[in-house]
Amino acid sequence: MDAYSSSRQMMDELLRSRTMLGTDAYSSSMHMMDDLLRGRNARSLLMGAESMRLMDEAISLQLNRPNLFYPSLREMDMLRATDSFAARFRLPAKTEVARLMVEFAEIHSETLARCAPPEGGLKQAIEGMRTPWLDIQLEMRSVAGLAQMQGIGYALRSMPAFDEGLSAALRQNLGDWRDAISWRPEIFTDLAARSDFYATLGFNSALTDFPQPAFDQALDIAGLRAEEYEPLPRATADDEEEGLMRTNAAHDRLQRMERLLRRFVDQQMTLRFGPGWPQHRLPNGLYEKWCDRKRKAEEAGAEERSVIEYADFTDYELVICRADNWREVFVETFNRQESVRESFQRLHPIRLDTMHARLITLDDELLLYVEIKRLMKGDQEATQLTSRRAQCKTGSSPASHRAHVEALA
Image (cartoon, rainbow, N blue to C red; front, side, top):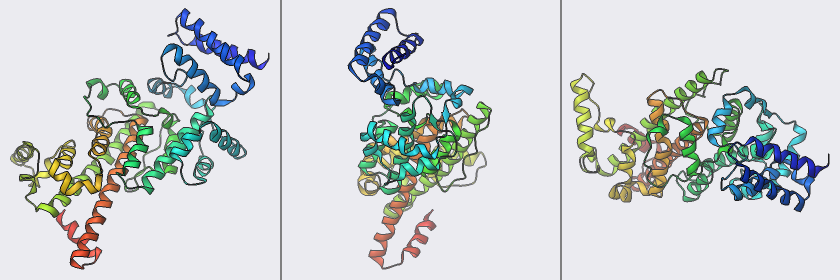
């Protein structure tokens, strides 16, 4: 069978396997594919992910359904629960690295330029993988996912935490979360619905289309696991147990991050306005809510704590983005209010699910690592800036000022 006939037979089998195609759509799509195949070198169309991309684009024009042949996030979640998903991946030999790099550079030159790690970074990442990660059916998609993850890690390390360039780069892969979101209830209870929701925001599913061990290793190579936390436990054969481990690890990270974030907000506001700042610098009604929670807790026998200890996770965004607080305290740290909202909204579903012992997905896990690393880096940058300013004013050493700042916590 020649290359053209092989290509056409492959397309026929793919289209018939998609039950959403009616007879008219199937016939029309095959005509379009026939024209495409005859109009190009058929042999080249059989090579790797580029042929799948071209076919996808052509059929999507007919069906108005993007990414027809790339599995949706919902489909990927279903696939991960089967043995056949892991069987689709292999560990490429060292002798294949050069070929993969060349093919990826030819097909995804824009992607490589947009999210490139340092020179040689992608090659080192590929060589550093020790578990099957390359999709036999969509090699370049796997390489792109690995490259983009390395690019995210490099950008987080090398750019200010809330630099507008970094925020824009992250939106290319994590989606655009800037607008206020009306959270539908099913997002917090149905993982498939959540995956679909992430897709509507522009989340790039290639970042998480790996078996769990490969995903974990790619995170480590990219440096995305928060160094101040214990490593996540490795996956087991039991899917529910794997999900519970992921949820428990996420809960631990979120708790630690929230305490650090609370301390950061309190330190910055106290340094500027004194310890009584909550009475005067909170949005309307928020101080009363914190005091009411504090009163009820102490009446129930809790030890006395600062009123900010009774803040909800969503309150920190309100404090930071209040107009006068933003202008006088936080603008230099976070740069744009929309970036703060985006960061908190990416974490919101994960925090709710971990607090209620519901499972989270690999997509959630990636969002968690990126945003925690980003928020904690912003905290460190702000503390260093405050230290430098205080040193210039008083002539004290950075170490003594840090001790003073820590004492305020």
